[in-house]
Every structure is written in structure tokens, then in C-alpha cells.
Length: 406
Image (cartoon, rainbow, N blue to C red):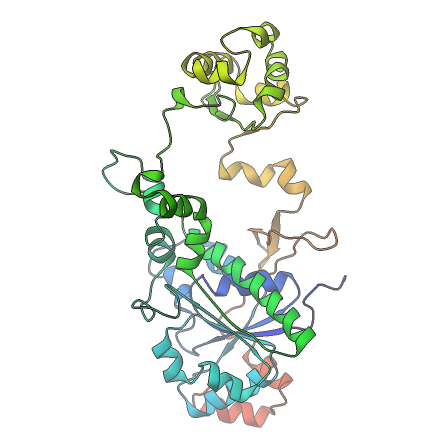
């Protein structure tokens, strides 16, 4: 097997749900060993959302939990038990990185704050992900991505059209996956810093910070110019560039044009769609003319694209060098030749004769697509990890008797 960039790196995770655990899911694909510490009885609460009716099982597997915890090892330790906390100390001593999304009070109660973890391992990189950041009046508050990332950052307002009765809602874990990828990048940076300087970093990020980063262009414009600076999407018939617009096909599907250099693309587009004479139409011949006659130009293009179905348009436009894409449904991506050719979707063996599709981490090293593995069963690796730490079977048995581990 080809060596991966983070082979040999051990990460200890005391975290739940998606935001911070998603970073570990990314890092396992890049070669890191991620040891997920869960309570011996209850485990990560995210496992329980299936039994609560919030998600479905696929061949016995919770797809969302699989995605968030791919490739990890699960160790069941009761951190409130003194023997369990001492066991965590041994685990931390062998680790490069510690990650958590517990709130400050929870970290203090379990003695996993920065000073506690650094007492176990002075060179460890300490990573904390929170809802609203480590300082300020909301520092200790909890939150999920639909609030801290989506609503609190201003993003919800940007995606809600005037006149809508209720604000727009995000897709599941919409901000968590972005925040997790951010943490993964930060951990790589901290590992580089420690390798070159010997200094271990304390890394902090939040869902609010990730949300602000996502909509920073709008935030900056609003800060500079005031409340009216952020414009809602214009009427489709009043756009300055009709070649940055979506058009409906004969079968009700969508072709999205995305040409930021319309002057260069307009004649070729007219040729490709079988209307070469329209390139010289004085209403549309220049960018300024198309802007002035946007209603007529958009209406004309709507009529043209409505003449053929999506498959036919994809064949017709295949040789056109301008920027366009079909708007696809999520269920079509499993068989998408571009997605498959790049290994962006992987079939992950569940170990029970079935597999589950999983989106690979969106970065490839040395031309190799990501290779995600299944998520662990609850406490699946407790004994094997403790044996690797040097514990004997007698010591493991005593820990079980004392309820420190499962």
C-alpha cells in the first residue's frame, strides 16, 4: 500500500456528533490513526439518532455515522472513573493530537482542558471546536450548525428571498462538514509547525467562524457599505449577463450557463446551439447590448433550451468550450462518469457482505483517490488499543470489573 501523508500520526478524539469528529474522518483517509474515545455504555450520542427515528439504517449501518467516523477506532472509556481518566493519560502520552468539542465546563469536569492534556503529553497538539468561539459573551454556549453556522453567521438571511414566510433551512450537517475540513487543514499545519520548530499548537475554531468565512464577501460588503449593501438575487430577466443563468430544458431539467467572459463565448454559443446568425443580432451582439436587452435575451435563450431535453443538450454542447453544466440530482451522482473517474464516490465495505457509498475526502495526494473505511462499532477496539499501550489481559479485566472500560 502506498504511504499516506499522515501515516504514523495518532489522534485522540473526545467529541460527539459531526463538527469536530468530521475532521478525524478526513484525517483517517490521509493516513492518521484516530482513536475515538466513547462512553462505555452510551457512546457518541450521534449513534442514537437512528433509534430516535431521525435517520435510517442501510444494511444495518447508520450512513451518517459511517460518514462522520470512517476509519476510526472506538475505545470505550468512562472518563469520570478515576481509572478511566488515568487510562486516557496513557493514551494521550502516545498521541500527537487531541481533539474535542466539549464545552468549557465539560472539559473542566473531565480534566481534559489544555493544561490537563499537556500534563499528560507536553508536546501534544490541542484542538478545540466550539459553536461560537472561545471568548465573548457566548463563549460557553452550545450549538449546532443550523444555528451557529447557518443562522448566527447571517447566511440564513442571505439565502431567504424577500417575501418568504419563513427563513431558509440548511441541508443536514451543512456547516459541520465545512468546519470539519477546516480543522483537518489546521491540524496538518500544526503538525508541520511542531515538526519544524518543536512547538505544539493550541488550535481553536468554531461553527460561527466557519459560517463567516463561507459568506465573507457579503459580510465585508455589509460592513463597508451598511445594511443595504447585500442585494438579494435579481430578477432573472434583469441580470447583467444572461450567460450566467440557468435555463430549463424540454424535459424540465436545468442547464446552468456560467460564462464570466461572455464577449468571447457568445459567438461560439450561438454556433453550438444552432443559431449562428444571432451572434450578430444588434440586440445581443455585445455585452452592453445583452445587458440592456436582458429580458429579450434571457427569454430567447429560454425558448431555445426548451426545444431539447437534457441528454440531447449535453450531447450538443459536449464540444463547446464555454462554461456550462447540467444541474444534476444527488441520486444521479452514483453513476456520474466524472465522479467515478476521479474516485470522488467510494464503495465502502461494511464487513457484513454489504457496502455503502461514501464521498471521499475532497483532496487527493500523489494522484491517489481517497479510500475511506467503515466506521467502528461501539467500543470495537477497546481491547486491541489497550494491548498496544502495553496493558496485560489481567489489567484489562480489572478495568472492566471497575467499570472504567467496556
